[in-house]
Image (tube, rainbow, N blue to C red; front, side, top):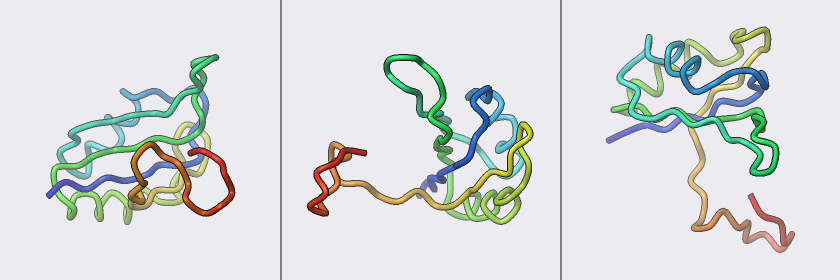
Length: 96
């Protein structure tokens, strides 16, 4: 079973290849995605890494959470499952 981690507080200049390189030290990286603004293309400051197994994801979280990456202290944890479409069903009416 694959493990997906959320990486927060990314530097705006970080790219997918940078993340893949840093996170591949802890397991087989299947996918890397930095979330970007649709209009400007700029990083939104977070991304996702998918590993081949949950144990690889756990290792990456333990080793990289609160470590410096591109001059910023990143936050690394398991990605939360979202409902389809990313709509929050908490009566706040916001997306994402």
